[in-house]
Length: 508
Image (tube, rainbow, N blue to C red; front, side, top):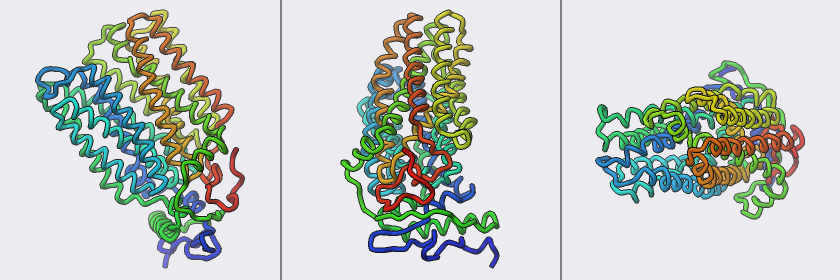
C-alpha cells in the first residue's frame, strides 16, 4: 500500500488524536487539531463553493430589487405597486425577514446542526424567490420578499458557523472574508442583469423582472445540489454525542487529501476533553456572551454598527446623489454602482491574507479607521464642490475597498470569538443587530439627509457614517482578539470542554 492509499497515522489509534476515548459521556479527541493541520485541497474548494456562493445570490437579490423598482411601478409590469412601496415597504420587509430569520434559524443551527439548517434555509430562499417571480399582487410580492429575507438571514448563521469549523485555522481569516465579500460579486451581476431586464427591446416589461427572480431560484437550486456533498461539522458532532460520525467524516477527508496529494499527512498535536451534551439553554448563551465574554460582545456590537452606518451613508442614497447633484440619468446609475461593487469585492480578496499574517487586531482596526478617515476626506471634497460623478464614485470605491474588508471581518470576528455551542446564535444576534440598525434606522436617517438636496446635509450623512466607523476601529484596536492561525477551541474554549485545550490558554 502506498502512502497515498494509507489512512492518516492517527486514525483509529486509541489514546491519540484519532478515535476518541470514551469514559461515560466524556471523551478525549484530537479531531479539531486534525482538521486544522490539513493542507488546502480540492475538498476545501467544495466547501467554499457549496457554502459560500449563496452570498453572491444575496447581492444579486438586493441589487436587482433596487434597480428594477422603477420598472415594476410602471403600468403593464404585471404588478400594481409603486416605486416607493418597493424601496420602502418591500425593502423593510426583506430586512425584517433577515433579522427574524437569523435569530430563528441561528438557535436551531446550534441545536440541530449546521448541515440540516444550511440545507433548509437555502430551500426557503429558493422557494420564496421562485414565488416572488410569479407575484400578481403587491401583498404577494411583499410576503415573499419577507420570506426571502427570512431564508437569507438563516444562511448567515448556518454558513459562517460551518465554514469556520471546517476550514483550517491557517486559512480561516482570508476564506471567511472572501466568502462574505462575494456578496458584491452578486451586486455587480445584479447591476448588469437589471440593465438587460429593464431593456424592453430585449424583454417585455412584464417578463424581464420575473425572469430575473427566476434566475436566482435556478442558481440556488444548483448550489443546493452541491451542498449535498458538504458534511456536518465534526466539531458540532463531537459536542452532541455523535463522535463516531465525526471520526468517520474526518478519516474520510484525510484519506481523500492523502490520495490527492500523494503525501502522508503529519501527525496532529493537541487533544481536547469534552463532556458531551445535547443542548444549551438561552440563559447559558446569554451568560456566556454577555457575562463571560462581555468585552467581545462590545467588540461585535461596535463592528456591526459601524459598518452598517457607513454603508448606509454611502449606498442608501448613492443613486439620488448622482441624479440630484450630477444630473446622471436614473437608468445609468447601475453602471456607477457596478464600479463601487467591484471595489467592495477587491477589498476582502486582496487584503484577506493579511488578516491571517499581520493579524486580526491590526487589520480590523486599520480597515475600519482607514475607511472612516477616507470617507471624511470624501465628505470634505464633496462639500467644496471638487468632485464630479466619476471622481465621487472613485472616492467611494476606495473607501469601500477598505470598508468591505472591515465589514467582512465583523462576521469573521463574531463567528470565531465565542464558544462552539453559542456560535450560530452569536452570529445571528450580531447580524440581526447590525442589519436592523443599518436597514431600519440607517435609511430613516440618511434618506432625510440626502433627500433634501442640500450639500451640507449630504456631507453630514457621510460624516456620521465615517465617525461611527472610526469609533469601531478604535474599539477593535483595544479589544480585537488575536485569533489568527489559532484553533477555534483555543480562541474560545467550548462550554463542554472538561480541561483547557493543550495548544494554549483561551484568549480574554
